[in-house]
Image (cartoon, rainbow, N blue to C red):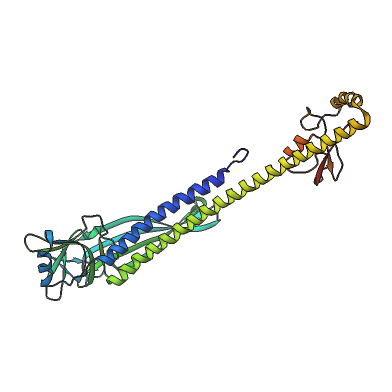
Length: 357
C-alpha cells in the first residue's frame, strides 16, 4: 500500500473495538454456558428420597443440582440491630458516602459514591424440606445471586454552613451525606440453591460450590427468575459484542473506502500522465515537421529562464485551464494536494501540454 497509511485514530478505534468485542464475546460465552448448565441441572425436592438418590449415585454426589427449601439456622440466628424482631442467618451492613463532584468537561455536578465501611456476618444454616429433611449450605458468601433482602435503609444528610458552601465550590466537591444499608437473609425465607450436592459419610446432605468451576447460586427468587436473570445477562453481553464488532467492521470499511479512493486517484493520475506525454510527443513531432530539427534545438536554451515555480528544476511544460496560467511542470501539478492554480487559486479543470517555440 505504497503512499497509503492508516491514521492513528483509525488504528486506535479498530483495535479498541476488536478488543472490546473479544472481551464481550468471552463474557457472553461464559454467561451462555452458565445458562446451559442451569437448563441441564436436575431439580430435586428436599426429602428422604434425596439421600437414596445420592447413595445410588457414583461418589455419592451430584456435580450440579437445583434444590429449594426453607432457611433455618444451626444455633442462634443473627438479630438486626435496627429492627429487633428480624432475625436471619446472613447479615450485611454497608455505610456509603455520597458526594457531588464537579465535572469540568460537561460543566455539571455528577454523583460519586464511596464505601466507607462494610461488615458481613454469617451463621451456619440449612435448607429444610417438607418432611424436615435438611441440606446444609456451605460457603454461602461465595454464592452469586440475590440471596439477601434490604431490611433497613437510612440516608443521613449533611447540613452546610456558609463557609462549607464556599469551600465546596472552591474544591469542586460537595458532600451530600451517608447512606446506611442493612441486608439480611431472613430465617424462614424460601431459598433456591444451585451447586454441588454431596452426601457426607455421616449422612449429612451438603450444598457447596461446584468443584468443576461452575457458578454457585443462592437466590431468594424461584429458579425461573434466576434463570431469566442469567439469560438477560447473556443477551446483554451478546448485544455488546455485536455492537463492538459492527463498530470495528465500520472502521475497516472506512479504511477500505479511503484505500479504494487512493488507488482510484493514483490510477487517474497515471492515466493523465500518459495522456499528457502522448499529447506532448505529438506536439513535438508536429513542430519538428513544420520548422525542422534546427529550430527545435535552438529552443532548448530558453528553458533555463522558464523553470517551474514549485520545484525550480524542471521547465514549465503545461497549461492550467481554465485560468490559462503557465507556472509549473506536470509532475508538480500532479503533486498538488488540491487541484488549484498556484497563482490565482482557481480550480483546475484540465491540463494541456505546452511546447516552447
